[in-house]
Figure (cartoon, rainbow, N blue to C red):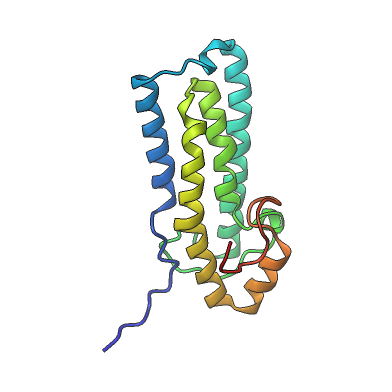
Length: 170
């Protein structure tokens, strides 16, 4: 007898683990093979610019999370979505919590002079897109049908970057 599929996206990896893995690897590489590029800049400016970017990233992420909570749905992708969030920051991006990770990590790399962090963000973004976002999109499309397809057609995945919609090729 087949058991029903779980009501969740079944993402390949829990998203915060990508963030932690990239950060740990960046610190390890910085220690083993320091590039010294960001360390050449004035530490006061590095901290100021990095701090502003980190605050912006945290604000974007927190805003996305708050909208989900207010909508009455789960923030954790290992739990079922009970409502589709299309208001607030979700009018500009379908993935504000992942979008917020960009400025957060760039800010951290500048403030802490972690040259490897922006370089590692490239494969991390690919892993996040393929291993998390695509699974979440398929789940939301299956669960909410036309409502999600209409929303995906109107709102970009990542702040105007990348294809709109939820076609299987992207």
